[in-house]
Length: 141
Image (cartoon, rainbow, N blue to C red):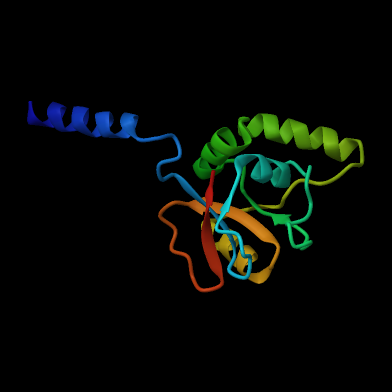
């Protein structure tokens, strides 16, 4: 009986957490002066609708691979579309010759490294990922 109580307690906690409560963190290069960014701006960066940071630096958005649960959470919460819809959106853009999607990398570590190496990069990784020097997390408002 204790086991059912524990499972119920854990489910209750999980269901009461906010949707973005610790599934991913948005990261940028440490030289980026931003401490926070609004969701609309992140959407624009990831959907190719905006290509420059406020200081003129070119944005280099980086995705996780399509099968990533973190990507699914990020797409649903921030882009407000499931991964399949984002993929369809980008296929339309590609075929019309208007752009290419952000590269999809295989792991948090690869996203972190790409962001660390590029001043204009923005990415997201799991909330539990440890960020090394050269990368910082920013709030999405």
